[in-house]
Length: 526
Ligand code: NAD
Image 1 (tube, rainbow, N blue to C red):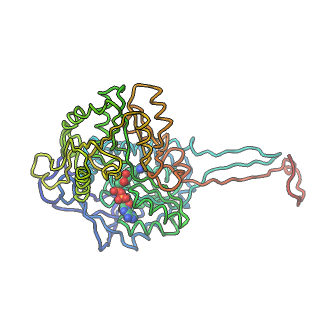
Image 2 (cartoon, rainbow, N blue to C red):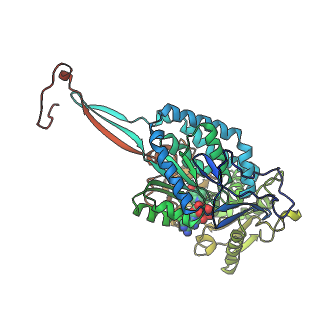
Image 3 (cartoon, rainbow, N blue to C red):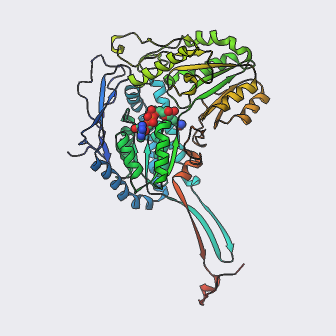
């Protein structure tokens, strides 16, 4: 079948969830190879359903072996001329892409609401955080320069960064625009080509971004998109042409990707799961802290790697639970297109069941469910079958309980009580994850103690979701990253990840301007 130059994806046709039991003309998601949207010949397909209604939105192929190979071959063909394209030209392409993503923010966000379920405002935030990586990548001409020094008379050593070749990105479902854009702008602007695998649960935003890449002037083959689950991941891990892999997702998949990818000699950056804590101290600005914690725990239905999912109530703040519950119960659980929605559904029926099972396990292990979101759903018959779980708060949680040890990835906040600041630090550092941690206090010295003592890689002081903007890097640690944590996403580390140093020592003897004489001994001039 011939390819298409525009993404044929059905993007939320209106700003409301449908009232039918399936989109009447569901269009299958295509591969994107050589700047064309190519229908797949797949035998296996994954259904993407609107999490708010479970109506069918599209089918995503398990790209065939031939399609996977065609994508990598296309990226390999495109590499020599893309790396030889001047940095000024590559920069211009990313400038244009940045402009186009901003122009298409609502379109991207509508697709994210439909496929992922988050609210429209939050979906725009998803796009914005990816856009900011593009914006920062526009400064590549001042970020990429190497170093040069005259090391001896007439002898210079210079080092500069070269692209790696064909790279790959494997993305999770929870940020369908932001996470592809953690990789794409930096991979491309540094001269690599990229084979991207979006989550099979919500690939639409990545395909819209591909369309914008074509419009921005990205040449054919520089970006290719393939689909699927484990088989596609294994193909990427084992393909010898692919030099580097960016992975974001769960520990189960990510530790496997890191182990097999590095064993195959590839560079791998892998951001994994989390259990982010907030320590609530009695001297904080209570109003700000409670609002911030509620936003960070329940926004995006808790499906953020930097969601605050564990609250450490220090001292008398244990008495603030009723106020926390009262404010949380005012959150509006609604379809993402609905006006004033605060949180939407979770991604799938399986995810809903897992979240509900973890709430039940807390009850069984002796914790107290002070706000129970099980069984909640918005009004409207179209939402009857959606994956709804309302905001849930669990108190009397002990560190051995499953609801504390496991990443819930749903709208559930677990609360642990401690008496002292030292106990809070010990508890938080005892957790195996290390993405982020926040402290709410008005004491500078106490905040500094937390800043210096906490092991998490991203610390918030009176800030609930301390995700660094892309002039910095995303710096999770402990089990929230695979490997040694030396390959962070975006920022300076991102550029390092997508480039390799070349160091050149050259001798241009001044006297050779007039004459040449053979010299066989090791150079000794100072
Ligand atoms: P996931 O691990 O299920 O999927 C991520 C990717 O891996 C997908 O493309 C999927 O197709 C593939 N995959 C899934 N299971 C696999 C397996 N067994 N073998 C090979 N490939 C596999 O993750 P998800 O559910 O899509 O995303 C949620 C997870 O991602 C959470 O754990 C969250 O904390 C994490 N996350 C982390 C960050 C971060 O920066 N630390 C950011 C976003 C999400």
